[in-house]
Amino acid sequence: MSAEDPSAGDAQSGGLLQSLRNLAATAVGVLHTRLELLATEIEEERLRILRLVLWGCVALLFLSFGVLMLTFAVVVLFWDTHRLLVVIVLGIAYLAIGGALAMMARRGVQRARLFAASIAELAKDRDKLTPK
Image (cartoon, one colour):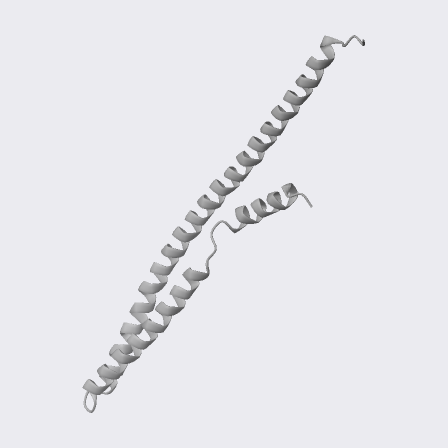
């Protein structure tokens, strides 16, 4: 009959518990890092969108002024002969350009991929944790 050392069982269970604690701490650390990355990406995206909207509005304002002045110049140029035709043609042209730009903007919004860096990091984590 061999005498077992009672402290040996405690050391093994302590080692197992310590390993589980370390594993849990690592998992929490990884999750914390990923959440910080996600929060940073959300803030960066918010600022980028705000900047884009601001510059877009300013650009739209000045482009509208330019188009309005050019339209006025063309109508004045044809005032005596075909003013109604010019106004109709320019109106149709502006609507066509506006529709095409709206479709391009819609495609651009649909292609945008939010949280790309977070998704890539999570994919890397998954690949590292998946047994091969």
